[in-house]
Length: 152
Image (cartoon, rainbow, N blue to C red):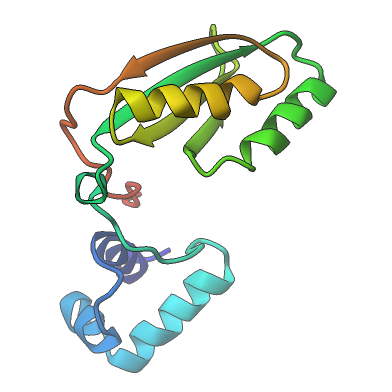
């Protein structure tokens, strides 16, 4: 990656809805060169897709919970069953296999504690092989994720 690729990736992470002409102008490339670079970054798998950033509060999702999950077994079969089951629940926004005390860390959004209770009972409690769950609730977001650092 050269400086133009880095600038392009930074610009796309900030706002991927900008036109090719606008992106090209902002990083000092011609529109055709900018388009070729974007296509190349997509084909290499570095750019995996585009999405809109949505304000969860405007959707009524005012509660963010981080749930640590510990399994009864760390066998491949137990982990595979858990990971497949997590895919079936849209209320689980993120799921990460972790090192440390918990096996997984999940992120869940809900309107309020009542809805989180429903998610806990109808979703989280139905996940296979769970030995323990520990939930922590975000009080306030301090910094919004703005993309990966791409400078080298």
